[in-house]
Length: 599
Image (tube, rainbow, N blue to C red; front, side, top):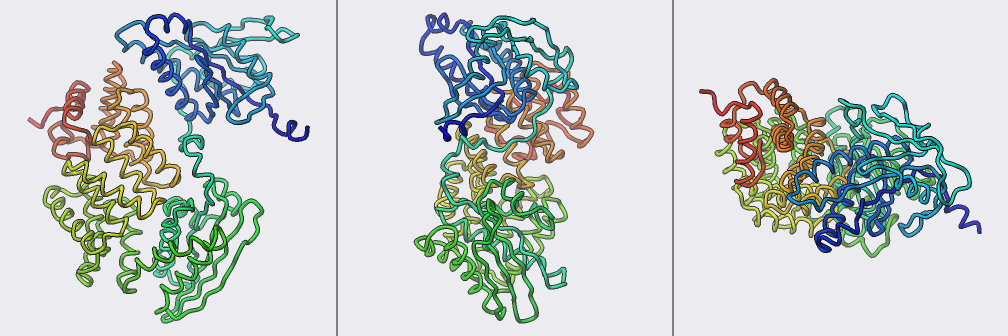
């Protein structure tokens, strides 16, 4: 009885049903099934983007849960508009149209199945909605902020089967000329990667520099990074990537808050004090749920023993979080990365600067990487570091010698792998470069090898999303981009992941989703060329000439010299699609007001 009581909760429930699904099935059973499933898949994505959870599909109906009625209404109205546009593009009348009901009530959720009074009431309200419409219970209506651009029609109190008292009901729609409020950027819903939650999860926070010397920040950050990469190589762990962990650098947030925001069980924190010849490190592993230390250790070593120090930290953390069985894999990962301390310092600086993603920071990274290469020409990591800096200068549009730099980057990337075939970074960087040459299959093979080496390196999945989208494997691309976002939810460079999703949806012909993800990318990176080009092309494909023209005007304000010819010269920086899709985008850009050339 106690277990049953605790499993119940009050929730906002959405129930959606396909109008006259029997008639659709009679027309063409197979096609009807495919289109109904596609409708619910697309609706589930919209629900997730509005902070809801689609729990189950029951034949021709879908049930979802929300914490707020406003999110349920926003998701419903947004999808009804999307679905109307989608159906208008179909060449026949086999078009799944939804009715949606929204209610508050007590529910029981178990094994991804939702039951209870709230579900029944939402279903009854859905049956009262018009085709393509939404009905909401009066109690839920009272919780929706009146500032939102929704219109309500009071349908009065109506008797509802199974309920003793009449229920007050409203029909809800979007006010004319208004837009659905943009949902907050959401990362991959947990239901899409349930296996991740089964692994012990950990975030390594940036180690605090206690040396009093700002120049030692690179050292502290580099030590943190190496520990993250070492732990990531252990396949039984789920490790949050560096870029997300480093959001909390100099943050006052407590461990429990950080763990909640990153979705992890454990947090590793530490401090570093480095003198001329010694290194002192304090490390503590915290169980976030109980906010209590699992393990802590102090190290005081001569600097020449830095890599032995890393081994000790690695072994102790892994032992505390999993079992001694996985120690060997972690130890091997760190042993493979050992190198001269001068090279390690230079590469740590270059890596940190590249993460800045500005023209100045990447050029400085290239300068430091070139120095490392001149000192250590037979280092695979030094070759990779130069190739990585060159690639980012190219892809972000900062390098005007594109072809020359690409050729050199390819040579360096190939050399890096010849020197160290077991370095996941080198596989990723070389794959990125191969994509610029249209060598999709080779790039995918390289990334697959990188994932074998380090299955928790989020950028590999982001790179795979790029490679698969270039190769026309759009659905797989979306899956990999979402996994990259889950592994690294706070990465400042996640606009690369967002635009990969937008690109995939564009190729699938799902232009509303392409617009949404392109806008997200531009929110993070307003100067991202491909964000603008995909947004403009997707708007125009939907027949929205006014918004496409406005988007073109904003793009030209940022880049006044832009022409279709100049975008073609930028290559994948502007349009990372296969030839036929690139030509389609260029044609649409001209129609939206982007000049063909400067003549």
